[in-house]
Image (cartoon, rainbow, N blue to C red):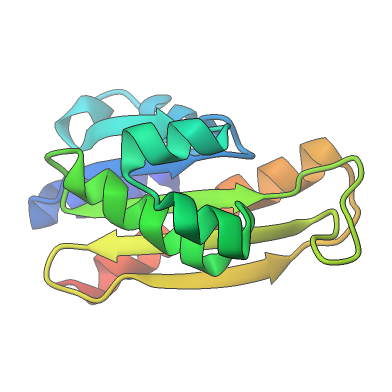
Length: 158
């Protein structure tokens, strides 16, 4: 599904979208807002690169960050839920991961966690292991996966 189709589906459902991004630095919001007329459905985007930003802007628990680390499904879930709570949106996607270069044994390069929150539904999280494909490629794949999550959520909400 194209970005324009995602926006049309959101418009048709009366759904506003928010993004909460870490390793992609706003790439999902940029992809959405590259399309003319996106202001009808894109409510806001949060770029929360630091842990402090995740806590201050999205309400991510410092305890969750300390226990699980920023690159975790728990944090992705709290980021998505926080984006809904701190916006007028009904659908939010979040991304936190290790784009590279580098990483660790526990958090390898290419591991990206995603959250999805929608009013009236349980907030979910998932992890993709893109591998050490290089920073640009991991970020692009993460953007595209987040857009697919939005498309799936909107397709199922009708």
